Each structure stands twice: as C-alpha cells, then as structure tokens.
Amino acid sequence: MLKPLDSHKPVTVSTVMTTDRPDILRVLKNFAFNESDKLVSNYRNINWFDFEAVSLYRRNRKIVGFSSMSHRTDHYSEDEIRILNRYYEAPEMRRTSKVFADDHVCMMVKQQLKMAKKLGYGKAFISRQRSPNYFKKFVRTLAEKTGQQWVIEKDKVAVCDPNIQDCWQYKA
Image (cartoon, rainbow, N blue to C red; front, side, top):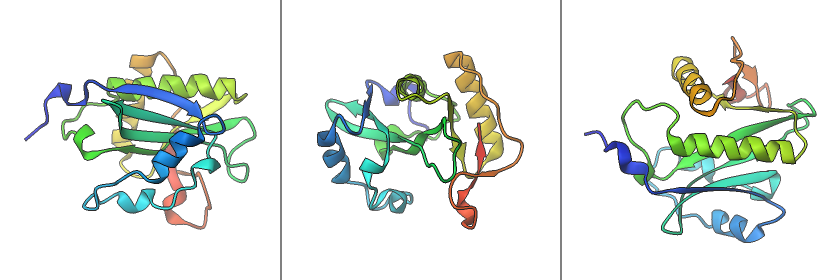
C-alpha cells in the first residue's frame, strides 16, 4: 500500500557547517538506525567531521533524515562539492510512490547549493550508483522545481576510489 502524499509533512530542513555545530554531529554519531533497514551498513562509522556541512530533516525536533556535503580533493575538482552525500531518510519518511524530488528534498538541495556558494565552491553535483532512468527523472524534476539547471553525465564517473566498483556513479 502506498503511503499518502502528505506522509513527509511536517518536516523542517536545516543545513549547518560541521565546524559550527559539533553538538549536531554528536547526535548524528549516535543516531539509532532501524537494524532491519537494508541500507544501515552504509551509515555505520561515519566520521561526520570529514564533511563540510550537514543537512537535517526534523519532525517534532526528532531527526528523521540527513545528508552531507563532501569535498574530496583526491577525486573532485578544486571548486566542486558533492551534495546529498550519504542521503538518508528514516523509514517513516519513505514512501513507495513514484514521486520525484519531494518538496523536502528540493529544500535540502536549495540550502546545500547556498551553503556551497558560502563555502566558496563554484560547482555542486549529485550522484547515484544505480537506476540511471530514475536518476534522470529525479534530476529533471529537481530542475523544474528549483530552477537550478543540471548537466547529467552520459556515463558513470568515479566519485571516489576508481578501483572500487561502487564508486562509479551517475552524476549531475
């Protein structure tokens, strides 16, 4: 059964520099993941101080999602930063309908693009390992809703160690 379209509401989005809010990083370090979540292994042992900024989804003061902004000098150009990095939504935030670029995601992207400029980056990108058709639809919808234009790479590119298969991702 599909979750209702308002299943994500109300939620607030905030984006902060990691150097400004170590208190939030401590909360994220102790974030309680649902152990039955198939993605939980992607979020264990994250060093939140490795990121330039983090964004949070909160509902009733409880964190129900997050992502980070990452600049990896060994893999990105000097003026480029990855947004929606380590994107996570708690199970109560997810839905199975094919809605692309929900409003809360668009808000997070807008905040991260603003933060990227504040941090001095000239370019920001989003990447996804699988589902190129979904990624294209997501990026196109994101562009329509935010007014931000994206260039989608034709082929996968390495966003981390090119010797690791999972590092090859679709990029916009």
